[in-house]
Image 1 (tube, rainbow, N blue to C red):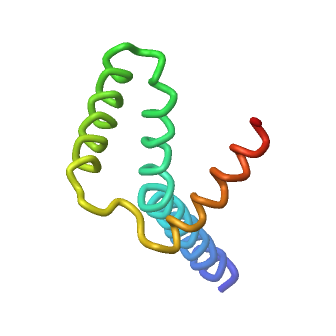
Image 2: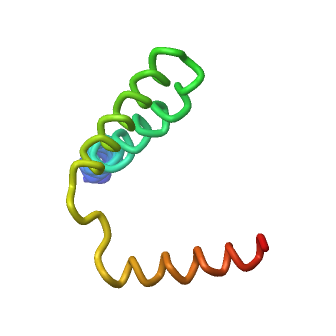
Length: 92
């Protein structure tokens, strides 16, 4: 009887262990892998090709931004005016 209970215990223990390992693996793949890829992309900025790609993306965004009629909303305009006026006062 005890041998049978011990066998059931080890079967349950091993199945729980496997389930925990699978849950940890799935959560890593879902939540952390994408973020780690983004961090790797940032760290790859030492390579010229990666820097050129980022620069081209940045230029493209600037071109799209320059083609818009209104870049800022009214609240943002007021904030920038205040900040620029303070900077201008400090520089003079």
